[in-house]
Length: 452
Ligand SMILES: NC(=O)c1ccc[n+]([C@@H]2O[C@H](COP(=O)([O-])OP(=O)(O)OC[C@H]3O[C@@H](n4cnc5c(N)ncnc54)[C@H](O)[C@@H]3O)[C@@H](O)[C@H]2O)c1
Image 1 (spheres, rainbow, N blue to C red):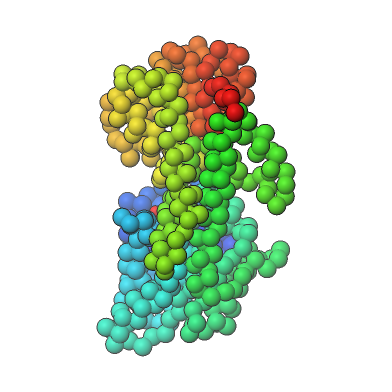
Image 2: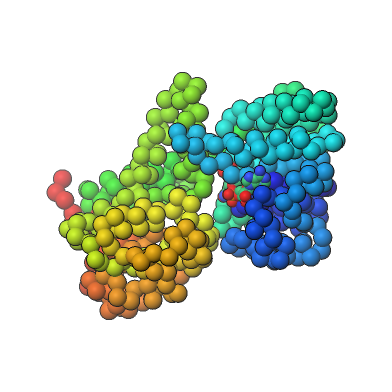
């Protein structure tokens, strides 16, 4: 089949690569000319395990193409994916301007019937808004071409996006009331057949339910994280160890081990904005989303957690100090720094007159792009180099190669040997035995046990 994908970011590029890998022909359209030019030269603009060979091979073999020419993209295929960003608006609701812009573009150039597919995470009712936009544009062209709008939200995880698209847990396809369901179902069965051989993963439903399914999934995962962070904060106050508690509850299969790691807050381009956007939608329809608001408030608090420790340890006096910072991406195996906990730490340290020596295995280019050259941030080539001349170490991301470290080297290199660990990477007793002060999350405490 021929498929066009508008928006070649983390979702669009990975989906396009995987669809072309199974034999579909994919036209990728983006407004970012620099990105498209890079892709044509075989330079992949994001880090995602397994993505580079997939894109290069399929480009060389002619199954995937890149263009800024929207008309070319519209004419290329009957199935048009919209995978552009939906960042939060000022009031927390999802900003749909990019989605609507693509809908207008498709309607402006289409000269045959189209199936328009929302892959972006969009509020309930967006399929109808996209349809309205297409309707208005076609009407202004005096055209009566037919079209359908389908909600097909994406569930990939950055860091394992390629594998997730090749073996999706589920494929949600939501159709609108008046659209031709049978034709849409046949199209999606054919499109996703290569990913559906082992068992049927496609769940057909109405568009509104499909749109809400995506938000419900992300909000559920964010809730698990905030729940665990709340438990960690309680554990810390009462002298319990959240790592034992985590193992104790994770062994209950109704709870499970996933997404119950305490830490310095969730980030990324999805959880923060999706929790906010669903809260906003709820408020608009007159329902107070108490749980979602609590999830967000706990996360905000948690992103400040390391700064609370740092201020406590240095008695608020950190002006002129240098902090080694390990981990800039919002989670391991990605270079994505959107809403990463490190931003809160960095901005707070700078506001108090401290400097930072940072290292991340993949996000150094992104950090350079975001922060440019500034005197109070030095991007270091290795995690060891980041320690040199630093007063303390702060860990924001649980990269695998931060786990097995030479603690003696850390002790000998830091001026005042102290680690502020937002990801519970080490055994507190082992670290403290070496004479390193160690602050982590919810481990009863690496500080002192209060009387209750
Ligand atoms: N990143 C994830 O892990 C993930 C997972 C599931 C769902 N989503 C959702 O998917 C959507 C896309 O997310 P992303 O992380 O891939 O975004 P992204 O910011 O990485 O990429 C968006 C791309 O769209 C392009 N674009 C903007 N306007 C355009 C237009 N008019 N025509 C063509 N291209 C245009 C941008 O230049 C950019 O390259 C969002 O709604 C997001 O919530 C993201």
